[in-house]
Length: 429
Image 1 (tube, rainbow, N blue to C red):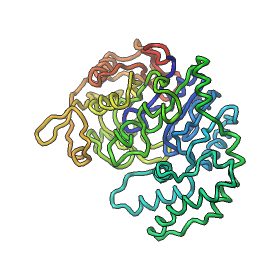
Image 2 (cartoon, helix red, strand yellow):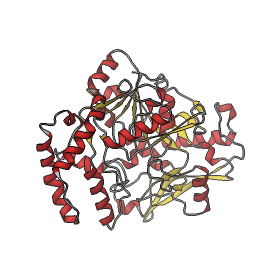
Image 3 (cartoon, rainbow, N blue to C red):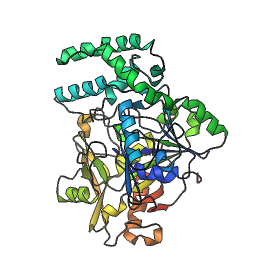
Image 4 (cartoon, rainbow, N blue to C red):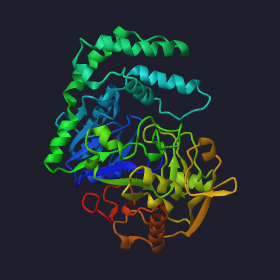
C-alpha cells in the first residue's frame, strides 16, 4: 500500500501544511477527511505563502483534491478561500476540487450559536466560533443540511423547518432573534449554483483511484490531543482527529489509509484553553513563541509554549495509530544552552507515564524533566543529517527513544525543500 495519512500528534499547529504539501508533490490525490474551516495550514513556496482552511493542500500542487464527507463545510467560506488563492495565482476548478455530496454544511446559524454559547459560558472552551461544533451536533442529530441538498430545492423547505425547530428554541433561550426559514432558503438558493459544480461521489472516485494503483494522501486537521474521544476533553474539537477517522471521513477501507505519519513540533504549543503540563509562563516560553512565530493560522491567537512533552506524544502515537513522525521546527531550539524534555508527571506523590483522562487531574500534573545539552550552531535550512550539529542529532534520537516511534522526516524551516528524509512514508514500511 502506497497511501499515506498525515495527522497532528500534539495540539495542532505542528507544521502539517508544509509536510502535506511536500508529500502531495508525490501523490496523485489529496483528501481532507475531518474538521472544517476552524483548522488552518500554512504553505510556503518560494516567496509565496498560502493559508488554507477548507481546501486540501493538494490544490497548491494542482493535484486532484477531495473534501471528504467527514468534513463540515461552510460554503461561503469555501468560496472566499477559492477566491483568495485565486488572487494569489492558484485556480481552483471542479477539475481540481471535489466536494463530497454527503458532506454536512455549516450555516450562518451555526456560527451564531457557537458564539452565543462561548460568550455565555463561564468555562471557555476556546472555540473558533466558526460553527463547527453545532454543525457536528446537527449531523449526529440527523437534522443537518448536506451539500447534496443544494440540488433539491423542492425538499429543502421541509429540511430547513426540521432544523429550525431545534435551533429557534435554543436561540429563544439565549434571547436571540429566531431564524427566518424563507431567508435561509434564499441564501442556500443563491449559493447553490456556485457550490453544486464541485459536488461528486468522493467514495467512488477514491475507490477507482485505489484500483488504479494511484497514491492517495489523506490530510488530517487539528491533532490527536484535540480529538473528541482521545483529547483533553472538554477542551477539544468536535470531530475525531485520529488516523482511523480517515477511513470513515473519506469512505474507504481502514486498510486503504496506508502509512500514518504524525507531525510533531520539537517543542509544545497550544492555542486556547485547557491543560498544558509543560507550559512555560516565563522568558523561555516567550522566546520559543517569538522564534517560532507562534500565532494561530486561523484565529491569529497567540499560542502557549512549553518544552517537548514525550509523555503526550508517546500516548498520541498509540491512540492516533502513528507509524512514524515528522519532527518540525527544530531550528527554533537553536542557541539554547540546555533543552528540557518531559519524561513523566508527578501527581499526589506518584509518577505517571501517561496523561489521565480526568480534566481535573490533568490540570494538577507537574512535569518531570530530563535536561539535554543544547547547540549553538544553526539547523535552519539543513537538508541532510551531515548539516546538523551533533547535539541536535542526539536530541532527535532521544525523542525517538522516549516516544517509542521513529522519526521519518525532519523539517528545518517553513520552506518546502528544507526537509530531511529518513524514511519515505510512501515507500518505506
